[in-house]
Amino acid sequence: QTSRSFILRKLLTEILKQYEAAHTVVPKRIIIVKRPELYEKTYVAELMFMPETTVCPDESMEDVAKKFQQSGKFNLAVLKDGKYLGFVSRARVFSSYRSLLKDFSDD
Image (cartoon, rainbow, N blue to C red; front, side, top):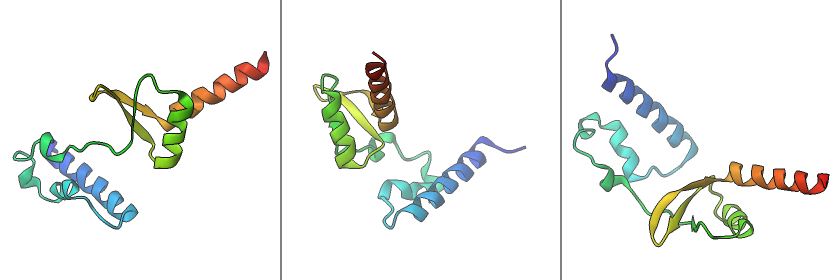
């Protein structure tokens, strides 16, 4: 029988391997994956970070699209008055945009 922590350790190890293969520098917060003894001692507050690029709920889709293009990110955090509301994905934004263009061209 496979324990929960064993499955978690295997999953995190695989994620780390894929991350290391794609990046030359591994952030400090990823290092705990290789040290299972830290799982019970490490808290989310120690690993969180403020995203470099954010959007506001009342921002135009044109501005959001530009931020996606300039940042190269696939997801952007949505903040209002400094509070996290959620995130918006590049795929969702551009899919919605294509749908709007299609609807507009059909008219």
